[in-house]
Image (cartoon, rainbow, N blue to C red; front, side, top):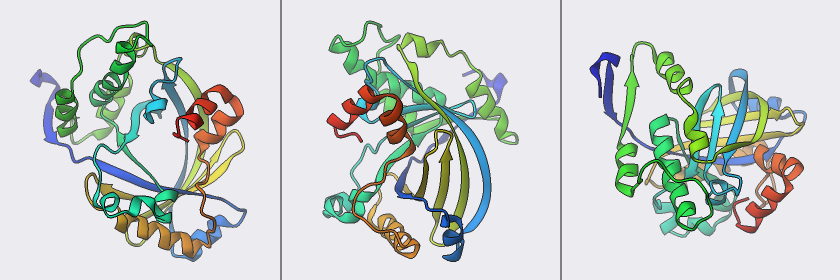
Length: 266
């Protein structure tokens, strides 16, 4: 790695986003503030999601998106935490929550996507060939390191990763299958709980309670915090609430939606 770019290699600690979605009513913002939620701002962002024409990434529950010009990858947790081992996976709390790792390093995203897609190439489902062999060792190596450019100006690193050559998308036969804009109002509560209230430009509103947990650690405390917050909000029901992507696909991409339902992804 050339030193002229001032790049440093540091250990990367992976984290898991534990989330529960809920339906928003007209008074939800007042309700959140009433339980101690502190608004940290409202902002708007545009998302574009990518997959192969045969939906191979999303059928692996792997979600590649571009947000504010930067790449993000949400994928299932690679390890099983203590909560799953203790049977919490089958509890009401676990059934209502999703758990994903979000990766924001573009080189690692590319390695991870290639690794997921290699099975598609092997099975003859994709006509393209991956530009290089991707092994689990390479994935683990990418998970343990990340590149940090100009630590005094983090926005420079973010910008550089988003403005690079995007030819890798076509090489991997990746195309945009969904695009929409969201207005988000964010809140923080005690015990490191976050609440986001989202309104998508296709008319769907949804809330989200989130707690971040280091990968491999016990998920049960996070789910208990989420359940406690849900009770304070007066949430009821034992079925998962649809997210923005669920509703978008159901409305505009019914074939894709049906395949994800059949594969128990949604």
